[in-house]
Length: 193
Image (tube, rainbow, N blue to C red; front, side, top):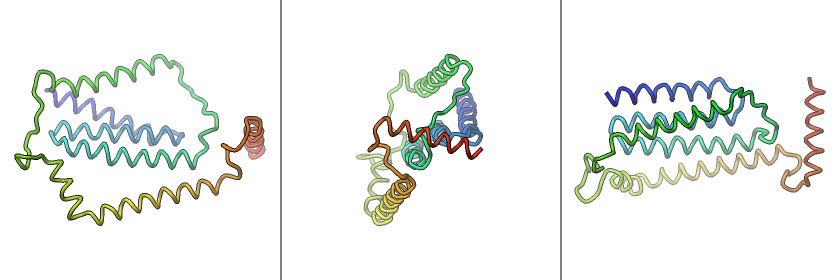
C-alpha cells in the first residue's frame, strides 16, 4: 500500500514539474522545475530498491540541469524585472512546505525503526558502488576523461559566447551607469513595440 501511495504522489509531482517546464515563459523557472522533475524521477528508483540508480539519477541528471541553469543565467537577461503574478504568496509557501514535508515523510517512513543495510552487495568486503567505481576508473577511464574534457570545452565555449554578447561588463559599471544602461534598454524595448 505504501508503494502505491508513494508512486501516485511522485507521479503527480513529476508530471507537475515537467508541466511547469513546458508551460512557463521564464527560462530559469523552466530549468528549476526540470531539475525538480529529475529529482522526483529518482524517487521511482528508490521505490524499486535501486538505490544506486536513484543516486546516479540525482547526481548526473540534476547536475546536468544545473549546468544548463548556469548557461541559462549567462545567455538570458536575468537582471530584468520579473513581474510575479502570484495572488496569494502565503498559500504558495504553505503548499510548497507541505509538499516538502510529504516527500520527507515518504522517504523516512520505511526507515524508522529499521536497521538500514545494503540489500545485495556484490562482494562481501565492499558493495555495488565500489564495483561501479572500479570498472569506471579502470576499464572505462579514457571515455570518462574524454567526456569530462568535452563538458569543460562546452562550458568555456558558453562563457566565451556569453562574453561576446555583452557590450560592457556589468561588474565594471557603477550603480549610476547600470541604472542608465537599464533605462536605455527599456527605451529600446518601448521603441521596438
